[in-house]
Amino acid sequence: MSYDTILVEQHDAVTLVTLNRPKALNALNARVLDELIDAFAAFEADDGQRCAVLTGQGDKAFAAGADIKEMAEKPMADFYREDYLAKWHSDFTNAIRKPWIAAVNGFALGGGCEVAMMADFIIASDNARFGQPEIKLGVAPGMGGTQRLTRAIGKAKAMEMILTGRMMGAEEAERAGLVARVVPQADLIDEALKSATTIAAMPPLGTMMNKELVNAAAEMTLSQGILHERRLFQLLAGTEDKAEGMQAFIEKREAHWKGR
Ligand code: HXC
Image (cartoon, rainbow, N blue to C red):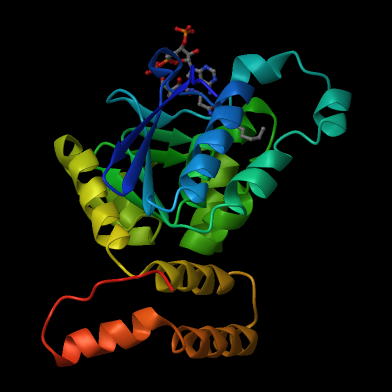
């Protein structure tokens, strides 16, 4: 697939994907979704690629939301018949088992905030602004915003943001637990790539299973989650990478991962 709305680059084992509609503040239209699904499926399938970073072109926006111009004229029957937005969940979020980071450079609003929250974690530039302003358009978040924002920052703040459409700055977002780290805007991509490179150098199976386990915390009861964790720990104990990792520690040398 050739891409019109995103850019894809490989930095060794890290895939950098950039939303590339800066004139529309990287608004997410149907084409962007198809291209993102394709690019992330290629990342997932490529054994040489171990971690991805998603960011937005320009210094103003990660993504200012779903494309309002595309949604404005669409009748309700079409939204329902197409099961509009379902692919974000089934083909995008659920299909990516390798880790990826959202590097948020400016506005992450509506669907933009929701896509950022689909990432394994968010690194934000100091000018990042997060919000779910759908209420002002007469709709609601439709790609997980009411659920992921509430889990990330708690009911009080999520409810206030969603009912008023208020944006949250980077520092408040970090304090609230929405973002892992805030960095100066000029350093954002370097910092995100550095973090992704660190993750890419970890044992592959362990990385995927650790991601699965942290995500399970949002889906399972505590006792189910703890049992799932113990089982995956036991599974990892049978890998060659576990033997190598422990032997390398004892021999005071670097480990060489095989991914099995
Ligand atoms: C389509 C968009 C857009 C969007 C910005 N643009 N956001 N186009 N969809 N979501 C376009 C503008 O129309 C304009 O193009 C250009 O980008 C620059 O935007 P401006 O508004 O001129 O910039 P500025 O004055 O700096 O304001 C920035 C902004 C504002 C505060 C981010 O653009 C804004 O409020 N955007 C909408 C944010 C939003 O409501 N997002 C939620 C969408 S609904 P032209 O060609 O006119 O110059 C959503 C639902 C998700 O995401 C799932 C459920 C359906």
